Length: 587
Image 1 (cartoon, rainbow, N blue to C red):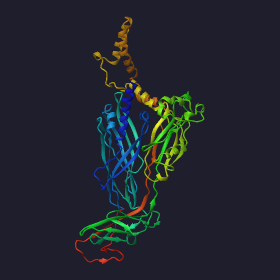
Image 2 (cartoon, rainbow, N blue to C red):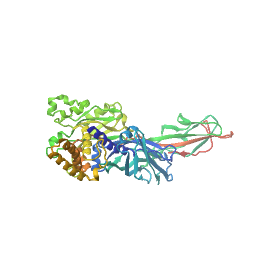
Image 3 (cartoon, rainbow, N blue to C red):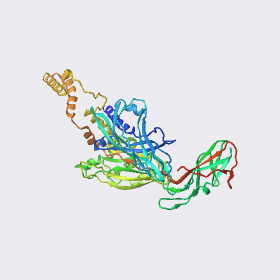
Image 4 (cartoon, helix red, strand yellow):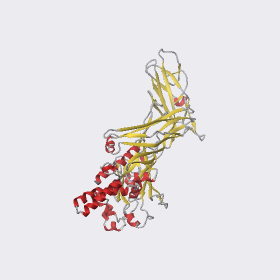
């Protein structure tokens, strides 16, 4: 029976967790640019209020979600360009394995109070594109992938500046997920963060080279044209501080079109008569530094300001070890056992955490002392992962979070760490660190079972039984049916009819439990049960890594091949002829 309760109720809340993910992946609508920009960001969602936090905490706490972002925005703009339309739409597909697990429990749920705001930062007066979709009913069919979409949410870039990069990043994400608990709708309110840049629109960066525009040349069929862009069309730019930034010749490169750089010049390969060969080149005056990814890790600490009998409560509410995941790799257990505590001194083998038999071995750690791992312990564990490597991260301890003295607004004391990606992992996008396994006293596996059992006893629909209202003979109420059964039970007792007494009692007992618990606040009960267990470690993305940005400009060379050969003026030093000198700036 208990296993049924765990499966049914655990899956129900899993529906809520899965649905949080349904509103976090963006897909393109009609493109404004030739190629909408796509990006995957890692998001983290937490309860917006205590009741919602308790429900999420019962199933692991914060939800880490991958955001597949597609933004329909201009890839590049000229300085001072006219207003530009932008739009964002999102969707996500739940795998068939997820729908199989949840469809039988919650085939239809409601997602409402949705806020989906895309922040806009850079040289434009536009600061946000808001998304406020209507509530949506989500139907799930077992074994079938489920795709959900909302939007598009449109906006406009206005007052576009003279240079820089416009960045689009999720700014405000929140929603309520309504699911059935105890026959009534219960809202789980969540807020989410997704650090990182979803897309960019490039404008000429201050200090990047100035390029005359456009460059239009004539050539002969199926030949080549060498263009001395550095000598004729490119000059040093001035940054926002008035400093002239010299052109770096070695940065000259062709980024699009039939051409290449040879001996410091752009060589354009021409086509047949009557065609135009267009080449986009880029040249820079330096780079703007990138951003190192920074993630945080919080570990719950035993609370010395706890209630009476704290010491026992503390021993039963502590972590022993945990692992961290990075991609498909998992660290060795990171220990939180005090090696100087008496049980360990008597049995040093306790320092080797029995991860493969934890449910049976957890009781051996009730009396061991707690010691938060050092920053070096966490760093060494991460560096041993091949994809991170030695020198790939720098872990430092940050100020601990003290417990709250306000009993109405409890705050768990935590040890906090900053994990910065450095070395070979510096200044680039990296994956997110997540929790692998958490070994605690009590084991976290018991928390799910206890809460599901409690929900079943409280009439929350736990177990495999029906959650519909019971119909009693004669249409009597629950209270009236209890009185009938109590009378039958009394008659059976005075008549020494044991079989009747047993059958009557068997029916009467669950009805009395239902009557006694009908007014209990399930969320409060869940919160009380959750508080018996130490919260699992909580990794979170603080700053998304970004590559260095070149202080670059782009220009376009168009070489026209006439249908009929003509007479042109020779361009000394080049293998082409020059018709006119115009330059087109592409960013």
